Length: 262
Image (cartoon, rainbow, N blue to C red; front, side, top):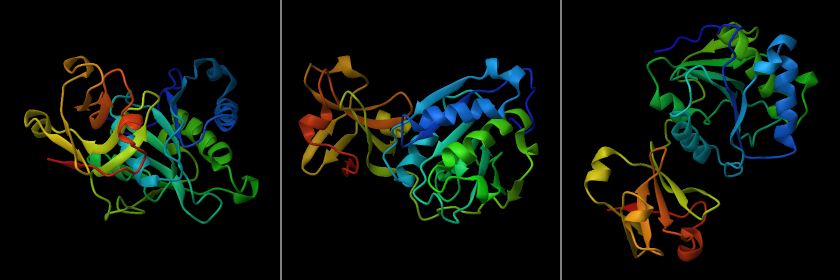
């Protein structure tokens, strides 16, 4: 497994934004990332909007989504993760290294499922910083974006990073899976917080919404147009969809809707 050493300054890793807000805030964060890089490296910077509309304020949903999405991202990547209802308070800030990738943001739940998925190389760091230069409401711009840029260059050698016990600021009471809709995309597909294991895929499971039962399928074209189905999406979560339609509209699904698996 990769080690959290400083990368070569000749090759910057990807820097990815994962947050519950979009423009103009992410534009300001992008500028701060570039400002924190040496001038000669700014042209190499690859800043990627991974997900800018995470369900607002919900750290548990965000933790599940982040772990699912991160699995397909290049090693050495640095994620700027900001779902931060405690911004401006004394909640801890820092970074996590796990699965060969860096995750920068508020500590206290956002990286819980990352740490569970990749425990073997996991390291947790707090970040000591001067609060006087920070906006009370936008640490994504003033704290986490520049910290991510510095980590992209220096790895764990950034001044102010302090190693913590692996169980610091964890949420042990959270379940590994969340049997709810945790995101609805632009097609009206409802992503749940339940991982589709191999056993799940082989057993022809049924997803239950109250008294409504939804059969599983491999992909959209395996069912007739207008048919509701449940399937394993591209990043390993169970998703409810309608072939060429909107599951959200047809079934009244919203973020937070509960499901059961038979």
